[in-house]
Length: 269
Image 1 (cartoon, rainbow, N blue to C red):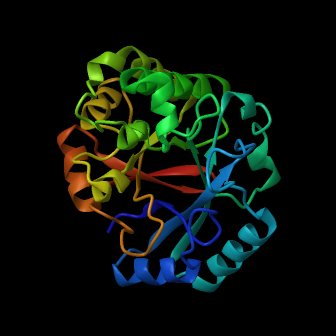
Image 2: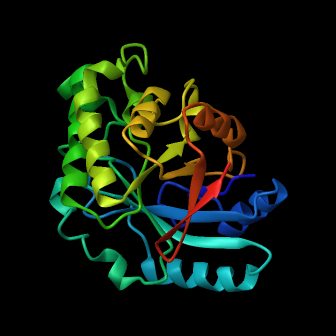
Image 3: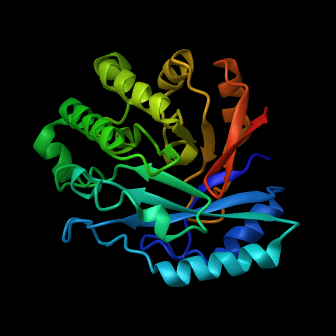
């Protein structure tokens, strides 16, 4: 089983799953390496969501470090975080990892655009569907151009999960210029992307990003790929990873990646 590098636990404000239950479920599924990546969105705008996406850093890192030592060497627990970024927070978060040297891995994600969370209909009421998609992708481009303290970018086209017609009117060609610029910047800075299978158990027929975007990333020279289920429960840990690996191989990828204290390792399929 491939390692799951996008998992949420009781430390995320939108999740109540005990961390030990996550570990037990992974082990029961034959997964011997996971990375916990609980949410932290610096300056998440108040009033737009029922959660604040803050994180108790001291308790979080102390708990994970103790578990990591307890489980070693039979189970490889990695300490990660999912940072939600906005243009207004890029500078403030630029030295975050230096404050927490125990971190193994950082996902950078976009959850808020211009004070709106695309999870809620108000976002698309403002921008429309195609306009909302483009605005979201432009925000990712800005982030990767102004922020480098991360390892992979998370769920690149996750906004499609919440569009009024989902993927029905999602034509990759409409946004290819932005994605080419995003991938070029990621390649230049040595960053990667995750394949996020969370959309597959939310009713969509492709993981994030869309296979056509994965194909573009590979054709441009992209190699850094991690697997993430984005699970907030125990049921979906490692969801559809084997099928996802087959898809990646068909697109020309030869390896997936893991991290240790922010240092990358490649593992052949």
